[in-house]
Image (cartoon, rainbow, N blue to C red):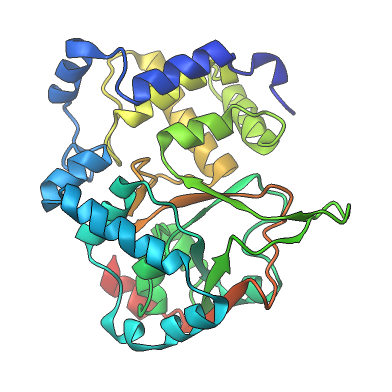
Length: 330
């Protein structure tokens, strides 16, 4: 079910990354951004710089936030356990301003967190062992929150929340610097790798039809359901369009074929890469209401199987998820 013969060429990938990092766009690209009609749920904001400007985040804020991430990166497991249950829990998560500053700083966290059914974490895995990459956040963005608050903040959709009502929700914090035996059983010790999570990093991951074969099968699935086909060869254009489209907005194009392809593309992202309709691609989660949530990072498997051990993780209960608590937030 792979679309290996349609994998994007390296040249196309380089062009995509150049465009998504600001190269080659020129005044025409800027004019298109200004003329954007659908502001989606973000008022037209698409980049971390857009959000930082709106929140008044400057370089000094980014430097301070980056220093705080570096300080947390030095924590031992015992210190992290104490931190999660200490005064920081009562203070609650960091501010939107500091969260955006952390993204802008470019400092990647050693300690990453996920929120979900506690039973899954108790089973010994931070995420699906066969996935090439998964979404995660920083402990600083979810500390002290209730089950419903934490799930909404890390980007769970209303439909996903409904499936967890009645379950005990857990917060799992993983030390990505602590090695574990590789899942292949070769005896080699490996560690999962942390990267930025944005349109650029997701575009690079999506192009690998071997490591992300399921995503490519989703492309084939949705292509077969529509007259206007969508293949891996269309990915550069789709990711470029997504990067310019505010979360929750329709793409700024009048071409019906591209509009149809974009719908298929977002469905394939959701089904194949877990990038739901709420995925912003700017490094932070955004809720159904359009509110900023938590920093998003990519955790790459690297043969670790996302394995949890007593030496590399902390799992705490956030309590049972109640429908009434969900309703208050949506």
